[in-house]
Length: 216
Length: 216
DNA sequence: GTCTATACGATGATAGAC
DNA sequence: GTCTATCATCGTATAGAC
Image (tube, rainbow over all chains, first blue to last red; front, side, top):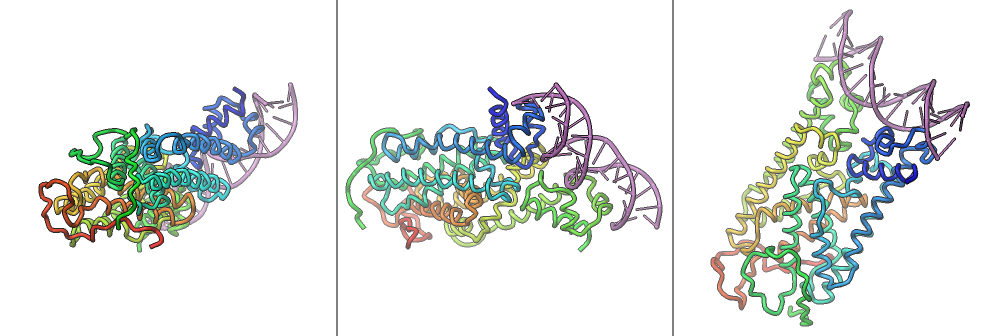
């Protein structure tokens, strides 16, 4: 692995762990094992390195959220992506950037973050719209709005988990969102299950796709 | 206003705006107008000042969330607190601390944040439990879990808003949560569904609402 | 590309006079 | 309590040799 790659890798990790403002070139050099001269040869400023590292982190995030576009029925994809295993105490590589004062002040860094979230939103919204169109949700569900809600549950779940130093609140927060989502699904053929929603982990079977039209 | 108070006030604002790690004693002095000698007389270290300022910010937050315990029916209190006017682009005074690397590394600062969130959670959960007990929700709603979900929507909504530099995503995220909440309220009249214990309790909440759409 | 040496302002204080 | 002076270290580079 060459120096440039090691620098980007180290900075990507540090952006995740410590953010931008409180990460010094010194830490990057120590973690990467790259010397002073090499570092400033490849990246004239700390900010240039951060740009490259942030792009890397954003690409990671985008590839994870690609499962929203995957095969299977749309509601299952949404539920699966919501409940996908995540390290709550590490938080979101990209979401963290929004809390960094020096990122907020830097239009170029902020624009990358804005773009990443806009793309994530559009993936969530598309899957949700497909679910509505397939009759999996009550047809008064607004997919774009709900997409923001689910993204917020994840981003905010990280905040709660870090505050308590415990992944529990994150897991509960998204589980509660899943419960609510299911309350907004269109009634399936026979809903006689009596327990509280949430005993099962993810629903993978074919959707309750009843093509009945709205009755209001 | 004396020097001590001006210092705490300035630091409280800076913690909110820039966090802890990236706020320097110099900035505090400039904003407060207090001199070097005075500052270190009142607060031997930056951290001591931050402790006082964070306690102040936490108290502010607690007094805001007191409306969850207020008069009125519980579901209305929950909805009102969820939708209370908030400056999305400023974010949460306390939630922001969870993203500050130097706060995360400091057990005492982190403990204050943990305690603040634990208390907020218990207020949300109590109001939600009252709503369930009053028959305002489907009785399979888990109040503690839902409390985390709603807190996460707010905390995460700030992240989305800051990322886009637009309060819109925050407003949509919480509005979507409100829509889902209402989908989980107990229907007004009994459905064709078998008798549930307590299904005859008086309803105090809003109509058997369906989620409202964005373009209502 | 990588190394060592150097620079200069900012950070987070401490010392001691008034 | 407040002031000014001083300080060691860090952050963020730049210069120039190899």
